[in-house]
Image 1: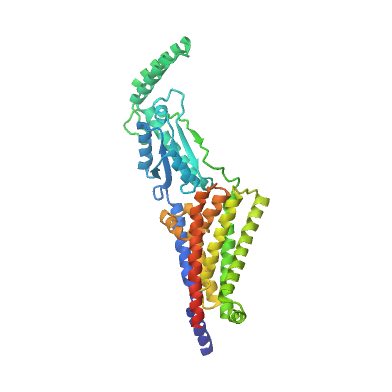
Image 2: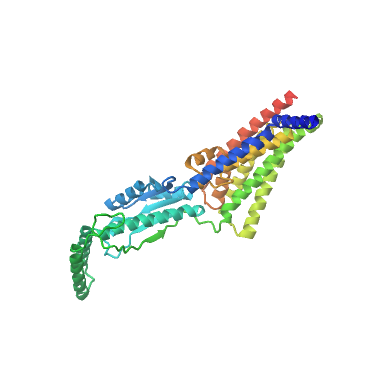
Length: 431
């Protein structure tokens, strides 16, 4: 029995000395639980607990459009940011927001003149990769527009105003034959008498108002063409995430291999030959980036051949992939300096890479995360890698638009590489 107790104590002491093992045993499960708990709680909440972030451009600038905008804001169902049409659609194209609502000119006139035959129109610019949120916004808009029509048809004063506007339009029209005009005048007179005699009815949400209980509403929704083509299929959205996981696996493998060569004396034996430290690190880095580029190329060819994913710009996509590769080569060098042995290096590497993938949208799309978590994801190179690849693959980024994520990736790669070399030199000196 004492032998068993001694063996148990030995294994527990070894576990406490292995920082990577401790992380995977205790810390990572807790992080997973909290992360997905936050995601699921934000997804399961109703609209009031998680307002949908949308952009709104009011081109009509009438009393009716201002009232409708305020109605959306007061509902608490949408987090409305007022913006102009061009900037709003550009931000949707860049993936910053899922939907841009445009209230076009003529909205107020259509709301005031229900008998004119002009439909009340709301235009929507939507991000094709965030169709669920766009569908939610469409449903909410239908509801609020319908509420406006209900008020118009349950208020006798509004009905009288509508009839008077229709009568004035009829009298000013020159292309209406006299017989039709006379028939419409009779109709308007009858509607006026009807509105004057409307009984008082208690309606849901309209207690004490006059009403007749019917709501003839037709909404015409116009999908506006945003400044890019939609992805031809969802594989254009999923393949960048698949590429990221291949890149993460390659990064961890090369980082651990460098630790293994260091701890087993391989690097020391290589350095006894006429090969310097610079050549060793350069060889490891070049092998890593070539493997990363091979993974990305294979994935893109497969996407094109099997799933008909056509890149928007091959040159820009090549630039994006190279920048992503350089960023993760730097990260590989940094991770190789953390572990004292290959086991701890593997644990630490995958722990860090998993966290970066979680924050950067590699596991759960950023658009379903809480706002604060999306902001925190900006520290992860995974976010900028997906942004750069998607921008050149299907979001139709210009050179200027692609410059920012690529610059961030290059800066991250350079800083990580320098920090990794310093850690490696410090560990080599300690040995």
